[in-house]
Length: 412
Ligand code: 5CA
Ligand code: ZN
Image 1: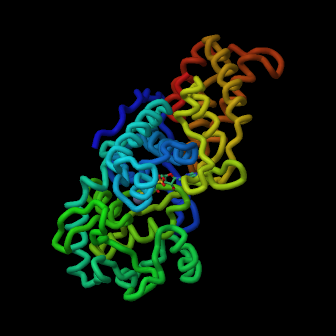
Image 2 (image 1 turned 135 degrees about the horizontal axis):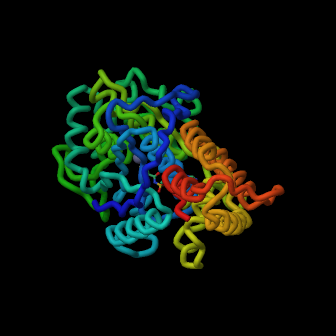
């Protein structure tokens, strides 16, 4: 399907360092060394209740990775999916009596507009679950050929025991997996399953639900295999990073890895699994099921500068769990006014050290708060908030402006 239009990204005179990321699978930092273009897959939205600030924070986090790689001299091959058919979407459509296709299209379009406003670089391939059904069918056939698929009534499951590396992505114990699985769409207690953790790869047709023909009977893809099929098709095996929010660590990314590694035991699915923290509101994780959502579009419709939303979100490290407050947004609005005042001067405090620090911070596990602190310090020095205004660098504003845009996506 169509992605959104990417912002212009200026080229910096200084190259950034190699990018280090926290890898969920090892629990530690890893320096990414892309071989050719860096290959990134980020799990996309299930298109209803888009785009809340939790979604936005996660996509901004991976936008920092995209930018850090580009600034380190890599091309980036970026793929994202849209889960445009799945149980929660169909349940919502049923509840509000809207056609599920219309709901998905409308919400996907809203997401595109929000991503454009927030200056998030668009994926080269933006792929829906529905349009990927032929890919999913071919992948299930490979899993069948590996002897890893069995039937329970009209549904097909993959045996987790078929993947010797099952569990290595999340690092969770079996007890923890069994606890989390039913909370995140799993059905551990279904009679006929070989292992409670096995997950659906093809869901047979149910009355009133959409279904597509397949060699296994009419039905639709399971959630996890959708991302596996799309990532393998558009990025190939052992791509650099699979990203998403931390609620996708298990089962989603574990199952994606499992499907891929059974289909192709010679390769891991992704080399690194990276996860963004959860944004809360009113004391609880911002989530569709709780309904405690703040929408990017609602803020935009109240004339809030999207760059202030972006700045407020970037003040938090992508891996931390934190709570959204309106006060932080108004703070960001004030900060942008100060920054714009400093940039309007043209000359300012020496810019090159700031640019180096911004690039170093972003390459160090996407440390946007550290990068922003460097810009705050430059603005204070330039405006003389700390004493005498420093205007010793005649091109400072232009240099800082370009780095803010290229590394942090803040176009002021
Ligand atoms: N379509 C699937 C992924 S294949 C999905 O999880 N969709 S979603 O719409 O529920 O979430 C989209 C992305 O936003 C996921 O990466 C999810 O981890 C992330 N996300 C959801 N809620 C929050 C939150 N409160 N804070 C941060 N990220 C969140
Ligand atoms: Zn996914």
